[in-house]
Length: 159
Image: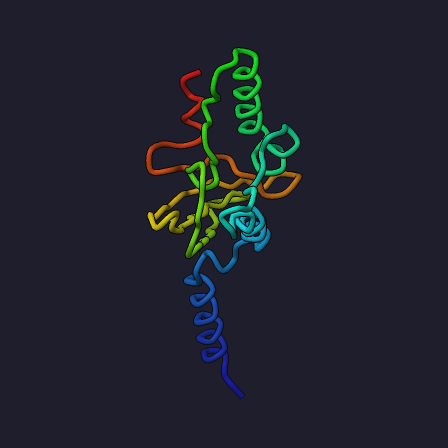
C-alpha cells in the first residue's frame, strides 16, 4: 500500500501532466466541425463554394457585427451600381479555386474564442489564412479572416 508521500508524488505528476497538455486538446470540437463544413464546399473546382449572398447566409458564418459590415457593403454597392469592397471569396482569398492539400488547425484563444490556421494550395500556389472565431449563442462564427494582404475587417475599416 503506497504511503502519503507516494500518493502526493503521483498526484503531483498527474497535475503536471494536465498543466502541460497541449491547449488544442481541450478545444471545442464544434469549432473544427464548423470550419470543416465551410471548406468541404471547395472539394472540387466546379463546386459553388460556400455561399454568402444573403443576410441569412452571412449570419450562418460570421459574427453579427462582421455580417452586418459585409451586408451593408453589398447593399450600398448595389444601390450605387458599384463593385463591393469584398470582390472575392473570403474563405479562400480568391475568386476561383482548384484547392489541394487542405489543412485546418484550430486552437483555443481564450474563453469562447479560437484561432484557426487554414492552409492549402490553390492552383498550385500556397495559401495560408488565419480565422478568428467566436462562440456565439448560435454556435461558432468567424469574427475576422486574415489574408496575406490584409483582413476582412480591414476592408471595412476605412468606412
